[in-house]
Length: 170
Image (cartoon, rainbow, N blue to C red; front, side):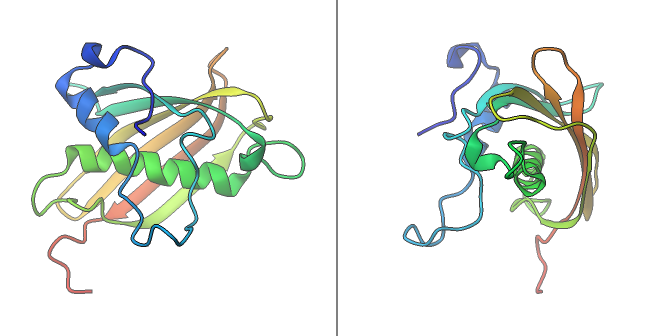
C-alpha cells in the first residue's frame, strides 16, 4: 500500500513521483520475519514534496502523526524511533539521487547524529524535512529536521553520513 500524498498524485512532478515510490522502502528479505522499522501506515506518514535541487539543495518532506507505538513511557516520540525515521527517510533522498555505481543501494550509515531540542508528544502532527548537504562518489551527508506542523518549531535536528558501497567487496 503506497504512502499517501498531501497533493493529488497527478500534481507531483517526475522527481516527486520517484521519491514517493521509494518511500515505502524495499520489501523485507523474509516477509515472515519482523525487523526493526517504523510503520509508515501506523504513523499516518504522508509524502509532502520533493525537489531535485537545481540551484538549491535537493529536499523532500513528509508529514506524520506521533502515535503511541512510537513513544516512550513518558508519551513522547522515542529517540530511537526518531532516529529510525530519519535514517529511512534521508536514505530515500539518497536513493532518489543515486545513479549506477553511486549509492544505488543507498549505502550504509557511517554516522547518524540527532539532537533533541524539545519533546514530541503523542498525537502531534509533525513535518520531517530532509535536505542533501553533499553527495560525492564515496560519501553523502543529509541533514534532517523534525518540526511541529502547526507552528514550525524545530524539535529534532539530525545529520546522516552515508558511505557508498557500490562496487565494494566488504
